[in-house]
Image (cartoon, rainbow, N blue to C red; front, side, top):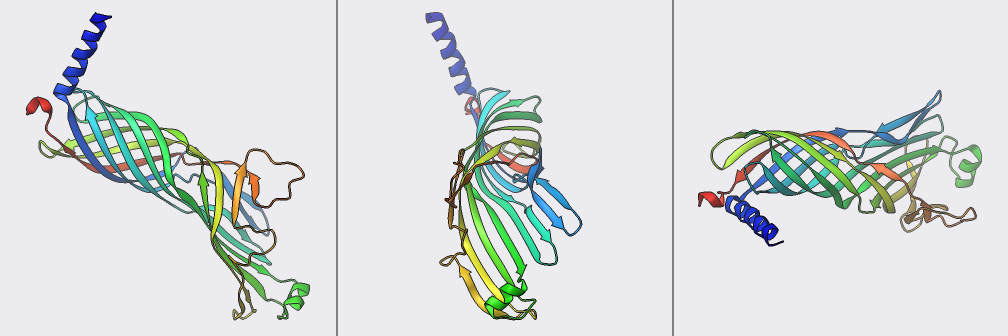
Length: 286
């Protein structure tokens, strides 16, 4: 036991003696990986699936890395993802037009083990956590009135409702995997540039959603708005709720529109990052 403590102390002391700290800032773009069905596209002749991942988009990261020796280290990073629009619903029929997209606005963190294969090539792998943000859905819907509906509103045939709304989705905190392989080029003793290929493997289970904006206008065939804000956040149509909670089980007799079955949505991606690193002097050099 005493021998083990002495060995462990020696290892820790040697690591602290070497101790090199570096800080990196990067940006990059990630593409969907292992895309799942996110929605459907519908027209008069066919219906198709729309696939993707909310992890696709541009990102920025800041990372701190601590090296115990010439090869091994650990890092902690924080990042922000500005996701690209993913098609949730696209409908083009004579009576209905729908264009619904959703995109990530997410903050994440990861901790990884770093290994230098050579002075220029390195790899890292570890755990990924989404710590904040949302998936933002932006929806446009145009519905042409039937003759009976037009008569009820007192508008001419060919009039329609035009709805625009934004809904923010939030999820439970997920745990995923991050891995990267990179190449760095030293500019001098302190600064270096790097490029890396990075993989995120993560999905998010929905917890709740809330309408951020909602507006419906009644529009005449020539495009003139006959009734502005017929529906709004303070006056939602029947069957539409401001906040929805997602659960794992629902009774077959449930009539509460504010509860829906939960689902997992994909955030996995594969991307390329570019950045710059600043290396502080090693303890051994001081």
